[in-house]
Length: 113
Image (cartoon, rainbow, N blue to C red; front, side, top):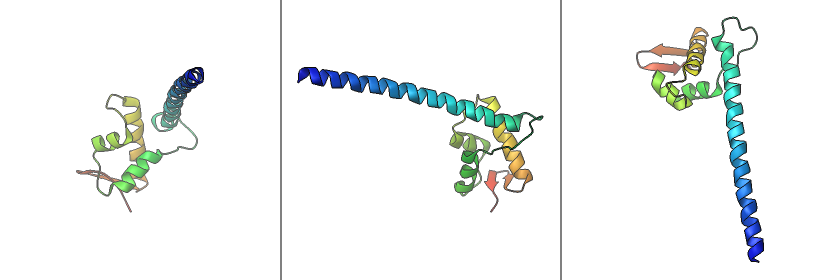
């Protein structure tokens, strides 16, 4: 019985290590996908369909109040040192503003209903 418990404990530990590896790989893939999507807004020569960040749109729509740039970046989980991601979010905001979907005021960005 002790041997069986030891085997199960080792299996559990191996499963935990495998799960940690999978989570790390998923995180890396998510970052790569976000970088790929951001290129559509950062590169001026991009042609094709641009996909807006669902998190950005949802954050603005559900906020119920204007969000400053800092609040918006915090809600999106973007650290201040990620210049490329910030640039992509800014480009998306400008594009959404051009379509009349968001407005910027002294209080911040808000979704237009």
